[in-house]
Amino acid sequence: MFKKILVANRGEIAVRIIRACKELNIPAVAIHSDVDANAMHVRLADESICIGSHKPQNSYLNIAAIMSAVDVTGADAVHPGYGFLSENSHFAEIVTKNKIKFIGPSAEIMKKMGDKIEAKKTAKKLGLPVIEGSEGNVKSVDEAKKISSNIGYPVLIKAAAGGGGKGMKLVRKEEELNDSLILAKQEAKKYFSDDSVYIEKYFENPRHIEVQILSDKKTTIHLGERDCSVQRKHQKLIEESPSPVLEEKVRQDLLNKTVNMISKLDYEGAGTVEYIYDKGKFFFLEMNTRIQVEHPVSEIRGGIDIVKEQIKIASKGKTSLKQSDITFRGHVIECRINAEDPSKNFQPSPGTINVCHQPSGFRTRVDGAIFQGCRITPYYDSLICKLICQGRDREEAIQRLQRSLNEFVIEGITTTIDLHKKILSHKKFINSDFDVNWLARESFY
Image (cartoon, rainbow, N blue to C red; front, side):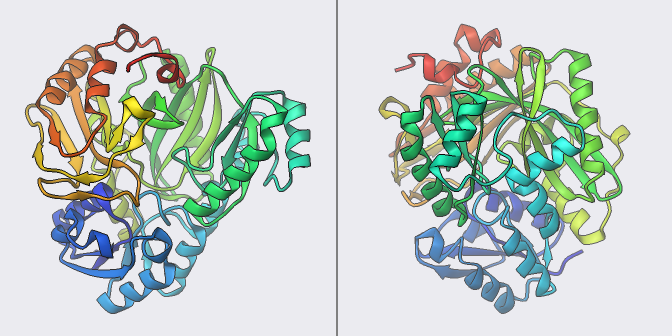
């Protein structure tokens, strides 16, 4: 096992990784910006080091500062978490060249699958159905117009190096294309240090389905699929497993094709392959070459600690798991709780949490980095914690989530807790009669 792991991230995912390190008896190093000096991930780590100011470019996206922290603390491995530099192949390459283990796939694989454009090309070569769109980076408005005209509006402009709705713009007519392309490139550069974007056909009312995988280059297993169709502004809000809309034949086809693709890639670590599901057919969307926000859904249902498996695979070069070791149990649903005001178009709600009471109970889990007195800054993603509940079936999982949300108390900032209560009691959610654009059509406020 590693002697020391530096966690190149912040917030709830940094806390999640540090907890896994502690269970494996590996010292964990936290990096932080000046405004995160008292954050939970800093408090839980065995040691910490400030690497810059509150601006992400000066701290959590500052490769030179992070590598200096690795050198100073003597860490022999780096876990990137999600977001920030987690899918930056240049960062992975620098870490590896300095003889430090990057906990994730190689820079070469990351370029191929972490880059959305290259991933689409690879998936197509390996036989997966892909969404119609551009073949590569779209550099000019004229090129964007030609591609969009060929596939037909509406289209999506998407950041090649990112995810989470950042650098993504919906274009319904040609007149909107110029401004949308400029904005998408600006956002991509800001959040991922790469302004490459691509264009693909936009589906009006699809479901968003994804498959969690673990691989050690030789053995690839899946942890089932997740349905992530409750979204706002192209960001997931609620995730569940199994998907309530997939027929078993389609499910097995999806899982088998995903495992088959990954097994041909020399892939190492955890990853997620995402799909658009529309009218009984699925289309490859992208691959995330990292841990994801919604990984607890698959962990709980499959009974596997994905973060610990990431570390074990990176350390030993192999997994001890086989597909037959995975036993799926019940139904699991996760609610992302953000510091946002849904009544004001999900405007961020920074501030100090004056009161914080988190729910507990049978098959109830909270992943977060909040506590009474902690400050939620305006400088980073608004996700503050996740509530995950398991039931014997979907109905019981919903009931358990409703009970837990009623116990959850966060005062001092506005959150999405009340919105989750409304969603979970809505007839369309209960009947699983929704798609990725459902929230935008409904009037919850």
